[in-house]
Amino acid sequence: EHQLHDDPFASNISILSRLLPPALLTPRVGIVCGSGLSTLAAGLHGIVEVPYSVLDGFGYSTVPGHKSILAFGFMSEGRVPVVAMLGRFHPYEGHPLTTVTYPIRLMARLGVKSLLITNAAGSLNPSIPVGTIVVIQDHIALPNLTGMNPLLGPLFTPNHTRFVPLSGAYSRRLRREAFRAAHTLKLPREALAEGTYAWVSGPTYETPAEGRFLRAAGGDVVGMSTVPEVVAACDEGLEVAVLSLVTNMVVVPDGYQSVRDEVEAEISGQTIERPSTPKVSHEEVLETGKKRGELMKNLIEKLVSSL
Ligand code: ADE
Image 1: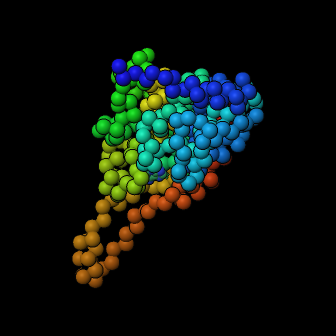
Image 2: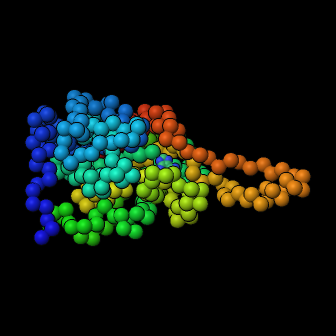
């Protein structure tokens, strides 16, 4: 009885069919461009940019470094039609999870079979430095486990599954292809890593204790996006790959720094040398995106060619 009565895609499909040549109306690959990574779309041939504002059910991305454009075009010497989201929606902007996931469902409806997601993330793992691209193999999503799961509520359609398994969410085939692509591009081994993405709602960056908590739980990187899209993609039966660009270090090896120790040492005439806890900023996140954007673009292009 809670089913949607109208086709939630009908109006957008009719809008897109007026704007796109027929060959672009059925993209095979979907790409989501994260913070500062919208240059990914620069290599699209025959690009048609559709602003979110002309589409129904799309929000507006309010985050600096995110455009609000759906870009259609061809990759891999014009062989593969793709659709790229330049700018995504985050729950912290006030977008409901249904809005965050809607573009993924639209992509699936258009015919997308493989979804490549990029994001900027903080590193929880001291052996994964800034600038590394992490091929995500699994996630920890505290919001999913505690009442902010994107699939809470009625089934999207009667044909959707109630209890969606996520054990194979991050396609083994695509993860392998990512490492093959890195080899073809002759990247140094340390350019890529494998790891687990910890999803947090934001918009505050995590405290040092929260960073240590997520690390202890098994997270390698932490970010405020991606997981809702991955969950929706799994609900739609898509094959998913996620590449996280590390933009800042979250966990410092030294851990908690006692001020009592410090004061006591001072009183007895000693000084303690302490590394300062890093303070992350969105500017830093965008800066790394700019520096490593080209690398991310090359990897995505190779990955698309391998599909
Ligand atoms: N995105 C980039 N860096 C981040 C961090 N440290 N925490 C959460 N999301 C991030």
